[in-house]
Length: 140
Ligand code: HEC
Image 1 (cartoon, rainbow, N blue to C red):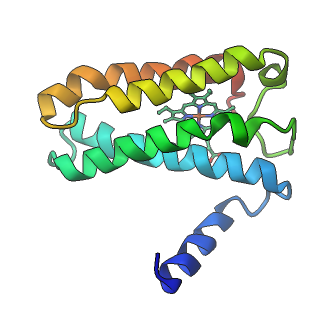
Image 2 (cartoon, rainbow, N blue to C red):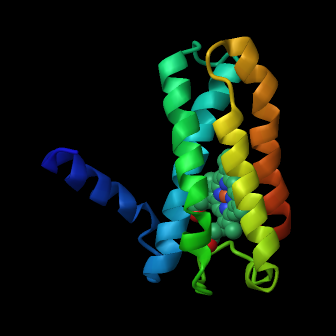
């Protein structure tokens, strides 16, 4: 990454400026990146943007990469008034981690070589998000 890009990324990280807790901010930023990448694929699947295999592959890789970081990002039982994390994450830790790796597997298994293949596999990715959010994310 060039210096300018690093500065830009650092600026972007202040989107959650109301969050004082660095650990909470880091996990929210990772989720936001997952959300952005999922949106990229979702728009292609819905025909809102043209299919772009390279962009889809990069987005799937971002989801897999960030999903792999879920255990490390959530390990510390940290809270913040802005956080949407439920305390059950830390009482059901193994299940939470399993749901994170389910997402990683779904993203890694997503075939982005054609729009049809991607459409077929995208439900599993979205399902992995919903599975975890239902149990462990407060909708604010
Ligand atoms: C293993 C559990 C888990 C999985 C899987 C998961 N999430 Fe999350 N997600 C969370 C939790 C917990 C939060 C709340 C974090 C917080 O506020 O501290 C969250 C928050 C978010 C947010 C809000 C981020 C913000 O700006 O504060 C978005 C967007 C999001 N998730 C998108 C997704 C998408 C899209 C997927 C699937 C591709 C996904 N998540 C999969 C647990 C998960």
